[in-house]
Image (cartoon, rainbow, N blue to C red; front, top):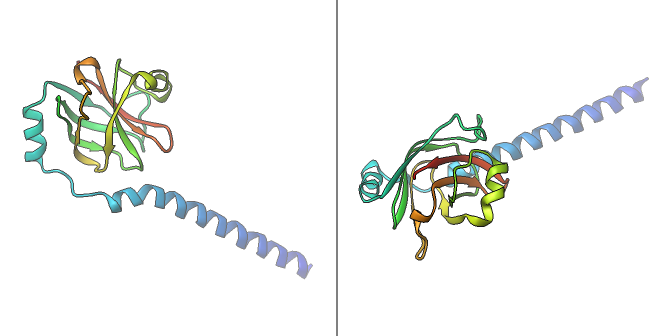
Length: 162
């Protein structure tokens, strides 16, 4: 019997270390982007970009593809030179901003249109952001701005602006 008790201790020890390892990895994936995020643009900077924008839309938490960990909320301003958010997106890694030809609200819908969409740039802050629109990209040719986690192919939020 003493051997069985020792075996149980080893299995329990390995299981507990594995659980801690998985939790630590998960927390690291979630917290690292928050810890390494640059300064959030001020409300004045976002308002200046919004003032020169041609279109507006709203990120909402109640979209089909949004959930507790993947969401956005606030007003999005879309112009020829920049796209700005006065609001928040859920923290996460490797966020990309896309312009999409039609409104989508989940992963499956976006993946069908991803080849017709254009990646505008990286989102590095989670409260307010300003992303420059690359030369040659015309936001008037699209209808929707979308936040996408490239690493995990995860829908975050979308807003129809035209």
